[in-house]
Length: 237
Image 1 (cartoon, rainbow, N blue to C red):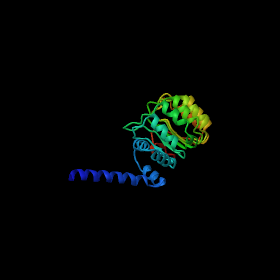
Image 2: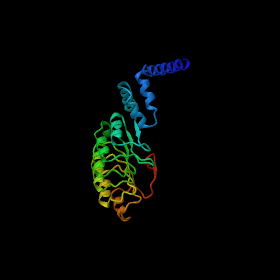
Image 3: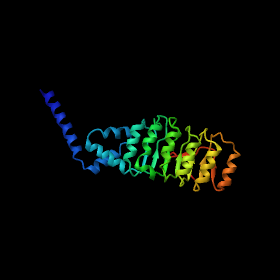
Image 4: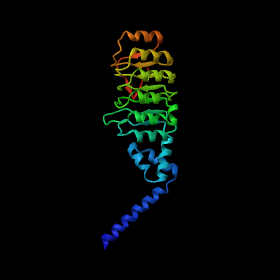
């Protein structure tokens, strides 16, 4: 009998705790959810109830930076979270030791988000599952982009042409180990992105003499051959 009463008491306590959480003001609940370190947990929290889903959306709407680095995030989850982050300025989808499993399909879905046109920094560092197909879609709407990291990917000149034609405010770019990019892509980039200050070309197959031509187009351009990466973006000295 005593054990039965104890179980009922514990059950009532859990229900009371749930009721207390549900009474939290919407802004406070959104703030609490914004403190979750894992986007997987944040996504799961959005499935608790309609009210919690709205709170998750509100917490994302206030974010200026979103990083999936180190998170086991797939295309659909990443795209859903980016679409909710309407004030986003800095998007980091870098692949780390655990891996961020984003493909071209994910980038295409992300590209349709309202925030993309206002992004100033994008990192796609080391994403082996993406190609020109997804990158072109994304950068073609990133009109405010200033810093781009696409090092360690399998992009070609096609992606650089898209960057050159749409990201005229670009200041820095990491192309480290992009072995399928040629001199033609680099020339198009430097020729059209007149605000470009720094470019990282370490590990590429472009011959060193090609960089002389880049400097003739932009004498002040910093050409770096060693990856200098901090917070997944180029650091312009």
